[in-house]
Amino acid sequence: MDEVVTKWDETVAYVTGPDLWVTLGLAALKLIFILGMTYLIIRVTRRVTTQFFENRRKGPFKITQRREATLKKLVVNTINYIVYFTAFIMILDDIFNLDVGALLAGAGIAGLAIGFGAQNLVRDIISGFFIIFEDQFSVGDYIQASGVEGFVEEIGLRTSKIKSWTGEVNILPNGNITQVTNFSIHNSVAVVDVSIAYEGNIQRAEEVISKLLEELPERYENLITVPELLGVQALGSSDVVMRIIAETEPMEHWGVARAIRKEVKTRLDAEGIEIPFPRLVMYSRHDEEDEKEPVHNGSK
View 1 (cartoon, one colour):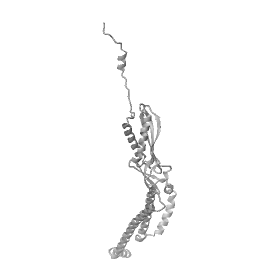
View 2: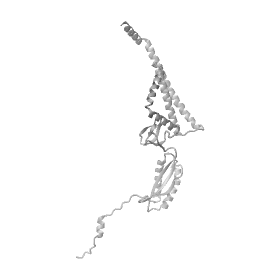
View 3: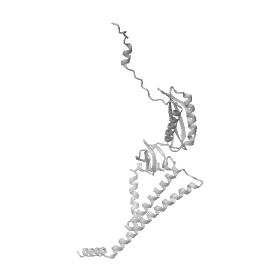
View 4: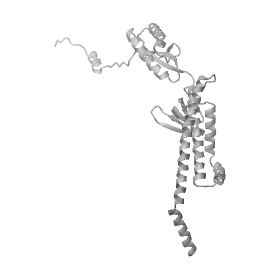
């Protein structure tokens, strides 16, 4: 009983004494120092990474802007993970006085056991590695993958984020990305079909459209070459369809196609060339019956 009382008295003395507050104060200072250094290192590494890629633009070995954005975000995220993990280990070791070596050894054994059930995670990481270093797609590209189509927002070692044009962000595990269609690597092609009425002069319409197409590169900088009129594409029920193609910068074909349609419509109207519209011819049964009735001369 005396030993219990003695230990209780020692505990109370330690709690109420100055040693506890000194220990807590030192621990708080260490925590503030570690967190401050973590914040400082992250800020410095981000600035150094940004400066490094800016210097690469001026050097002889340049990389594309899309690949630069991907690699820069990947490097920054990797450094952040390393710094956060190191700060966490320092907090456990210096503040809580835990045996980090034994903790890491136990975590390694547990990780090995979990690894047998985490094959999908390993597959995602390996796939992410090859996506990045094979430059299959980069941040800012417009792609179609795993039934999702949109702009690449972020590429990580495990997942990739694709933002649809309507605003939804789709997060895809890299291991599930088995086939990718990248629309942003090469120039795009705008395809425009123009309908001319059968009553119109097709030869005259071709001349007018060809002359207009030669003027368009001066107005639209996204055009790579002069648009080309291929000729008659189809014979419709009420129209003759002519096709125009135009090579544009990547992902600019939609806007260029809309502009070409507007320009062609305005020019054809100015030249008096008719673009067909649906026609509906109606017959009245009563009119047919009136025509069939015999005509009387009015005599009885």
